[in-house]
Every structure is written in C-alpha cells, then in structure tokens.
Length: 253
Image (tube, rainbow, N blue to C red; front, side, top):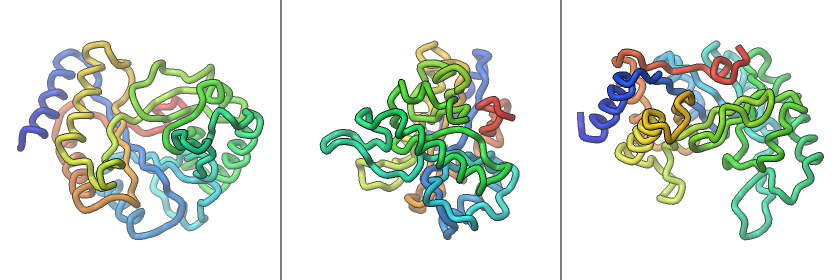
C-alpha cells in the first residue's frame, strides 16, 4: 500500500476512533443512453455491491438506459438538457441568475415528469444540476416542483437547501477537468477524500454529511476504472465503512 492509500486508510481509522460515522456515497453524472462505458459502470456496481446514484439528463435520456437497472441503482435528475445558458464569460450553468425562476422551474418540472416516467421506481426526486451550479434562491424553490433533494459539489453549508429539500453533496471528483480530462490521480483523489473526512472530524465540515465520490463514466480512462475497483475492494475490508444509497441519504426511502 503506497503513501496515498495509507493516508486515506489512516484517516478512516482516525474518524472511527473519534466516533464518527464513515459514510460514503457514489454519484455518476451525464448518463443518457446505453453504451460500453455505462455497461462497465453498472457491471462494477453489481460486482462491488456499492449503491450507485446515476444522474441522468432527462431530455436526452433514452428508454433502453433504464431496462434492467438493479435495485442498488438510483436515478437522479441531472438538470434538464445540460445546455449552458450562462452569459459569455461567466461560469457554465444551466440555471444562470439571468433566467427568470419561473422559466427554470417550468423546465425542471417538465424534465422531472419525463424522467420519472422513464425510470419508474428507480427514480429519486433529487436534482444534481450540471456543473454543480444553481442559484441559491432557485434551489430554495425545488420543493414546488416535487423535488426533495439537491446534490452539488463541496462541503454543504446545511443539511437542507430549503424546507423539504435535503442537501447531500459530492466531494471527490475523479476527473482532472483542467488537467487533460483524465483521471486526477491517486494522490489528489485520496487527499480530497481524506480532507473531507478530516473536516468532519475537526468540525470544519458537516459531520453528518456522507463523503461523496463523483464519477463521469463517459470520461473514464483505464486509470480511473482501476482506481474505482481498488477503492471498492479496499473499503470492503475496513470495518464500519458504509456505502449509502441515495434514497436513504435524501430521506426518501
């Protein structure tokens, strides 16, 4: 075991010794249609028995995607169409502050209805906005369109984005989007996980939030796939580590 893995395992041990829950969860973004990468993702999920929250783009989703999804796969709503509507020069966002909230909520509601119809019982009413961005005041109105959860990136400010809307974020992104768009590397990835665990132990992060691992199956190289396999194999051998399913995390079970 190299230094990066040893540091991660040691941080888990420190969390356990401090009486902290060691809860992880797995979200994968940008699903829309069947393909070899998605098949590999679902195969890994089945072999590892790790619950998967599959964030699906509603208006791009094809019905065959949902055929035969196992019980351990939950479907989240990944925006509406994943189009960037931000002003030139601004950070990418499907829901920029320039768009009237009524318009955005209408699009979200229509997309939610389509995705729920396609996904059936696998659907969990949680929005994972593309690029993990959404105006706070818009997020506060998600319950109006039947959504009960919000998932973005980074340590959450509170357990609820608004009344009736639980928030559980991801904290570890396997892809280096600004560094070649391949695997971010073991050292950086495990350091991010360890940092969130340490933050929960020290009180700088919400101690009740599960540490979220974010993947993008279509962007994975072999190093990313190999890392995921080792992650699941390693955590399976460590006492008290729990991989949580989305319905439980977002209190919709």
